[in-house]
Image (cartoon, rainbow, N blue to C red):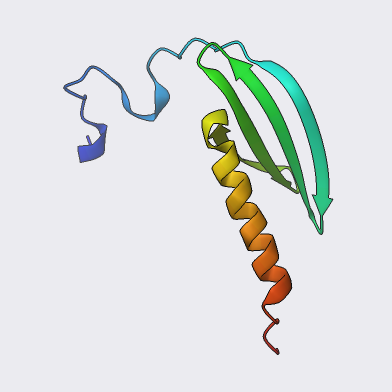
Amino acid sequence: MISNERPSPFGRRPYGDGPLKPRVEEDTLKTETIQIERKTFILTLKENPRGRFLRITEDVNGRRDNVIIPSTGLDDFRKIVNEMAKAAAEIPAKEQ
């Protein structure tokens, strides 16, 4: 037995061999898709019993990655994205 395959003292088995978590029901409130170069971004506003959240999915040739932002942080997230867009427009690109 390899050291990381020992039974856990907490009763959980490694690599997802234990019971699955019950699926949380989510309602989709709004979805938008944007294509930027070779990437597709899907922004989905959802709601579940714990609250509302924004799921940002990046799809590159079938590989998907997700970021989830609780609705309580959306105003702060928007401010930072606006600041980054402004900086990208103002700061000259480096010569290559």
